[in-house]
Image (cartoon, rainbow, N blue to C red):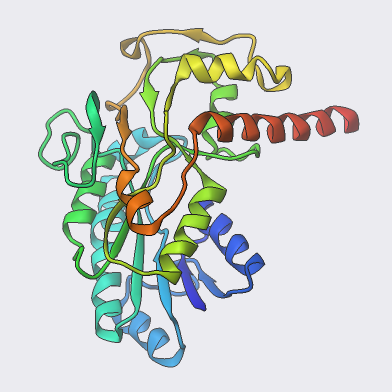
Length: 290
C-alpha cells in the first residue's frame, strides 16, 4: 500500500514508523514540506503520486495543554476545523480514501459510554466546552462520513518519556484530579489504522480500550513500578487548578469498531501496565548512565 501520512507530530510519527515496519510505502510530510492546506498544491501531489490512502494526523492541541487553544484561537480553528475539510475535498476529487484522526474530547460526563451516534455534549454548541473541543467537533461536522473514516482517540499512552504520553505527563504533575477516562495505546491505534486502510469503510469509529480506569486506579498501578512514581502526587479538585478552560472527562464505547472491523482493543489495564513497564526500563537505563 502507498500511504500518505499528514503531519510529523506525535501520532503521525508513530504511525509512519509502524507502517514502514509493516512494509508499506509511506510518504510523510509536515505542513512546511507539503502545504496540504493549499488545495491546488495538494491536488498536484496526489495527481503525480500513486496514493492508496491518506491519513490526516494534523491538528492543533496546544502546548503544554489545551489551555493554549484559548489563546491561539485562529490557528487552532484553522488546523482543527478548516484544514480537514480542505483535505477531504481534494481526496474526493482524486478518489483517495481518507482517514481523519479526531478526538473523543467532544463528550463529557458519565451518564453512559458514548457511542458514535451520540450527539456531542462538549462541543460546538456547549457554552462550557473548551475552544479545542469546539474546533474538533466543528472539524467532524465539516467532513462527509459517507466518504471519510473518522477515528476518535482519547488520552494516548505508550511506554516512552514523550511529553504527549499521558502516563509520562502524570509523572510530571504534582497535583492530580480523579476522573475516569478512556485511553488509547498508540501502537494499538497504529494497528487499527492499518486495519482500516486494508478494509476501508467510511464513518466514525471510537478507538479506545475496554474497561477504562480512573486516575486513582492508574496511580495504584504505577506503585508496582517505583521509578514512574512521583512522591509529590496529591489529589485535588479541578477548581483548585489554574486552568483557562474546562476538560472533557468521559468513557467511549468501542463496540462499533470491534464489530465493523473485528478488532480487539483489549483491556486498558493491560496496556497501562505494559507502558509503565517500558517507561520503568528507560528510567532504569538513565539511572545507570547518570
